[in-house]
Image (cartoon, rainbow, N blue to C red):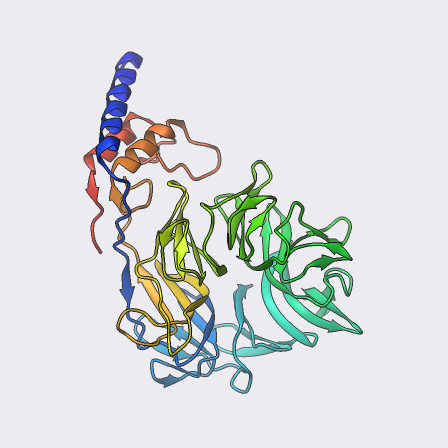
Length: 424
């Protein structure tokens, strides 16, 4: 096809898109299906993680699906199954991760449980509270608040050669406050928490580890005063910071905000109305959970999804609702076998209190480049906007046929697939 013909066709499609835009409202078609989880748990769910292709849940609960499970259980696709473990006499399970093929579990005190799929071993940590895990430079790291003499140490690395814990940073670095979240972004270790000082300097909830200097440093420009960071992750090459705050670096975005070195802080459509406790990635969308009824002006129930192509918040089905005389809270999120899980304290629909829920989205719809479950004007405009070669790093949303180019073939694919994506 000659260049002139391609240009003419693009011009015609652009006119078509403009005409549709004048008569079509942007829409989000939510065909997310809630899945039964055998009655759920009898108390709080604080942590979720996939291990050996099964979802593991931990918390204060002692029964799941009506079965005695202690404080930790796995979902086998039909039933909850106890994992046993050293947690029955403890307050409960608070945090989990996977490292070197083992499930690592924090039991709310100075003990870690290690499950290899068949047996448990335990690992003592200095007195205190483990709140977060990370792997940095192939080292296993925990964050929280641990006693060290008359001060606190807030991050420790496990030395597998000596079988000992080593402090990351000097005692007293974070004052009397805690690390609540850890992540690695562009090779650097980041810590979030409820701290306000760092080595005597202001540091509102966010710090990074300076490997060369061997010390924690405030992340500047940081969050607004009295900020608390509860979750960190990396999404589409940006650092995502979530918790209780209103702004960062003068950019307003309550509860959740993004950062990269090129653009600095960027708002996520103003954020949410209250605070965010949990983050995960599902179908290339950022999922946030916490306590909020609105995200970017969209009504939601304590959980929402961020559509990065449309730059807007969207609901996750009907969300979760109040339970047992208490307001609803989502404390943890996880993904397993193409299903999104949320845990906390809540009910949903007419099912009564369950404290855990799972959803599954519609099957993938190739021409739905915006991820709103409909092939429509949004997708057409996106393809035209992203016209040309794909960037060296993903995502390349408009490249429907995965050719490395966003071109006329992708436009044709969108037009010929027009309409709702198939239902599950």
